[in-house]
Length: 338
Image (cartoon, rainbow, N blue to C red; front, side):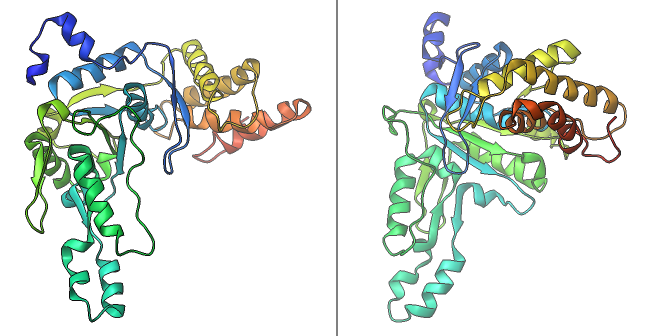
């Protein structure tokens, strides 16, 4: 355990980020991620704090659209930390999390820069990966600047860190999204790097590492498409994000989600709570009807799609549009809604 946590409970609480319960957390637009608004619940706050104290990765389980990725972004925004992310697919290799070798750029340069061999050194095409940024932000920034010196089209990093964040003493929030899509060997290989708090880059052997005090908060998500290795699960804390089971609780929860998302700067138009309740009622109907069929259950993402459309619909056409959306947004498995 990190020595910073070997104090009294009151002192430990003071060191933890204030993920305020029920407060709206405004998440700024960053890269391809849109702006959003998030509200933490008590169980998620407890899970984030446990991950901070133990230093273990936090695995978020749950159906698509339950806010797993957004939770990581909100944790970074609430704590004033940089947000670094990587989306996993079947081709992702363990080294991709540490660095990426830009072979395409090197081949292109080799065809036009035959006389300058220094420009073709392999290290000149080594780009920092998400773990590099999470462990050693300043080192990753320097590496990126070195690579960009010879590039006409400049590469960009994860984004500008918060103004008051210090790379020498501050933590990063690292999101490893959709780990269930990875080759089975990747989760365990990744955890070894996380446990060691560092690695060496392949050209020159420079150590990329962090201290216990600056260990990143690592949040991993899964949509349960593939069973994860038991060894991997043993080394994670696990928290499940689920939609409420009871119909009325689900409707209230969806309306609350809709209200907070409408507070985002990029949201276009406004949808009344009464209209949101009608849309939420349709979602609840669809989930009840499909519950025992093994088919996809619509949830938060479908509800948000519906109210985005409804917010841009004239009041005279709301009833007709709701009926259309019932088919467009909620019927993803075939057949017709009646």
